[in-house]
Image (cartoon, rainbow, N blue to C red; front, side, top):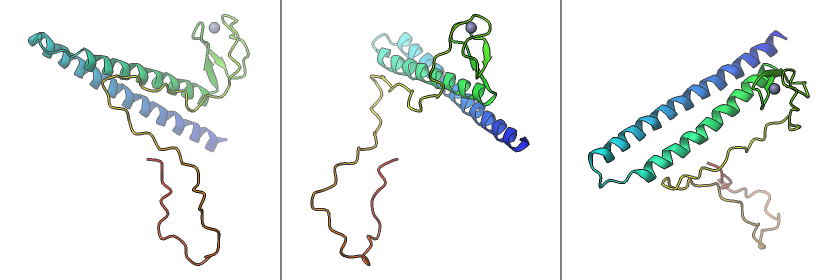
Length: 157
Ligand SMILES: [Zn+2]
């Protein structure tokens, strides 16, 4: 039991560390936005709208990430938050004990709930290529001894 609690505590600390790092990144973006805006103030010929918007969108995405991490922290504590009144409830509750709102049925957090970044000024990040269909001329298993020296199977970055 104590060990279990330890693990939960470690998870919470990790999540909080991630939140703090994300908050640092947000501060950095705010800083950059300030510099960009000031640059435009000094020279009206510079248009920084795109650069500023890209950072604003990144900040919005990071806020979403932080919100998800906060939900994970609550879950480690056996709690969840009411979407209506923000009151913390026991995970098992079907209805908020304060306002009576029904909790959504989706108890599991979807892993890929993060929206794709929509920033127009940032280059699209390289996505891992979808593995292509296996070539039709795949060799039949006739050479058991000859194993490939280094199969390139790492599509993920
Ligand atoms: Zn509520």
